[in-house]
Length: 408
Image (cartoon, rainbow, N blue to C red; front, side, top):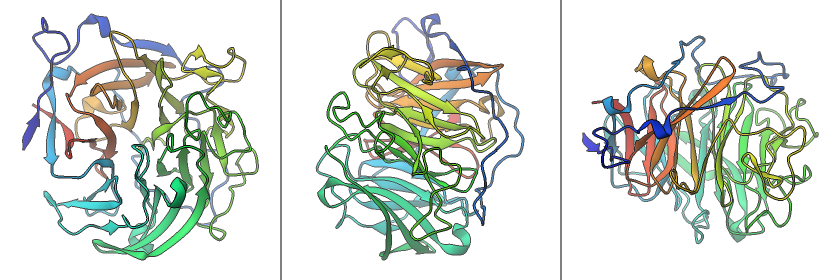
């Protein structure tokens, strides 16, 4: 395999890690939040969930990053923006290309024929538009259903279901579940993920422009700036789960542009990477079983600082954040996944990164406190992370490659 070299953040360092200037940042768990509470919400009539680990031993310290590298396994892609598994036992990886295709990586080979090609209906003239997210139904082996998030006619968000058989999906099988008007051509969000409750979760940006001019983030009547939750197993085209806090699709709010959400395979905790305005990039966290209605603060807050208002009770502060200024110089967070693969020293560590700098960070929760540390400088733009059925973590880049974390 080709190797992605881990660049040195400071020339005087003799390793690919970082100096004590980026020692773990420790943040207390926000008040009112507990670790991995048991699920309390009602279940769908036909609940189904992806395979999960029922127990796991989590790391309580960060491994030495000098002992690891990001190894390239796929190249030649056209702007990959998502990597997913169908959790069907085949070991396939499905890679979204922004302009409207989904490719399959199977048995060490990138298949030449796309799994799905809908470039004829995807609007991608803005950098944040395109085919953006993918999730497979928990019963995919039986029903062949998968769900995508893309910008369609007029640049508006479409959430659609398609049907596949084997390595080919039928583009004519599209069933549009939801269309969300987008007032501007950015902050489209794009994440699609099934939760441990069997419901489909959607990450929606605030509608774009600068500073949330339409105040969508704090408007619970808008679907923008939110995490949405819908039941695709009941209703036509879907129904609203009984536990949704406002009687609508809205599950959580106060988000600017959630670029990737994920659920921990071991315990169902929800992690959100929310792109900042000009000062802070943040990771938000909700333990499994949390009630809906969480307010992550945008645009009152940007991360932990005030933006268009002052801090107020009831806002959930980030689990972790980093700044746009030195030494981090970040610009756009890329949310990731909790590692649950074959290297036990990484178990329980949430791995995420920054699109512009190529930095990869680690974050974990232990005894009510978050520990956050910058681990790798990859030297590539990080468009997305992915996770295989085996719990391994993948990193996608604008350079057309996909990498995985390996020991040296």
